[in-house]
Length: 420
Image (cartoon, rainbow, N blue to C red; front, side, top):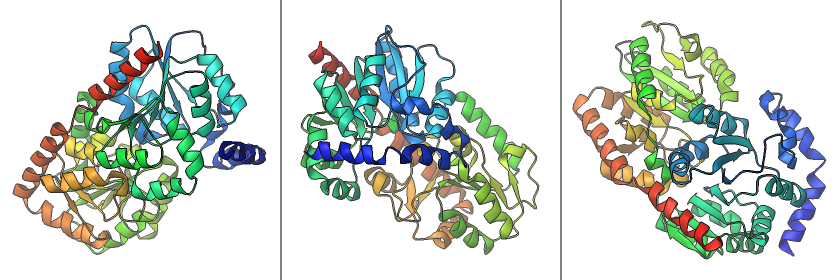
């Protein structure tokens, strides 16, 4: 009954979907492309052995990278189909995997039964892997009915999100109960998922610990640093709406002995952040200008995609955004992996265990607000020994927690064997 009501609501909302895509397309024209895929109509060829991974946006796609690479090796007869819900997720797939003929990208259809069936009829995946916490009740139910193994991998569920899912307890319990298996990031994630109705749950770890930058991005980071000059660098990465204004106001009262680099999380906000900087009269340059950075420049706006590892490698200290405001935080593992000391705000519920472990390891420090962020950054930039110690602690922290990819592959192999 719960899923019937859910589906009826989806049908009521159907006339609004084209309007939503058109409106989002005003800021991101890519939303107006490939729209037929969102209703299960694909030009991409079917008829070949396929393992399907759903990675909704940028973060999930980047986290899937080590898993995709291992799946290509372990299942040489299969194509990997990556599906997304956002254009930036789709673009990230292209940046990470290029024109590999064994990797394809598309949009996952909206959760209408007719669209889901068209998707599954087209590609007939041997198995589906949903990254993190994307729960689509009709998709799960139809895969279950067709005996298509469907796993939730790299699964995370914060206490806040669990409270939200409890408001839809019947629908959530049915969906989680029909998954073939769940690979959770942490014990706490696993228990919350069990409490909501998941059955076959085990802790496999966080795939993001297995993501490595590659030599090309590290070399790009070195070139960025040369372009930025000799001043120490504070990177504010993956910032979200509302945070940049707080950071800029705090930077306005700081001295100019260091360079601040701000990289917004979402590319459609690059111009908005540029306007925020300009309105404060702070000299800045855009990364896309590719020019040299003079001593008069206070801020560099990181308006590029696919370079976050390079930014981290080029910085002396990195603040990881989404954490000054109650937004849950972003991935702090990447800066740790390249040995860059990390600062995080008070709101890290999406990465709670990783954040606390990084702090305990000496790889990260928590700040209370934007002023504290700038103050702690200045103190670290004036203390080379502390910077070295935090950087080394970060590398060790990332190394110790690696291995989720191998455990997730074991879970996939067992699920495929059981379905054979």
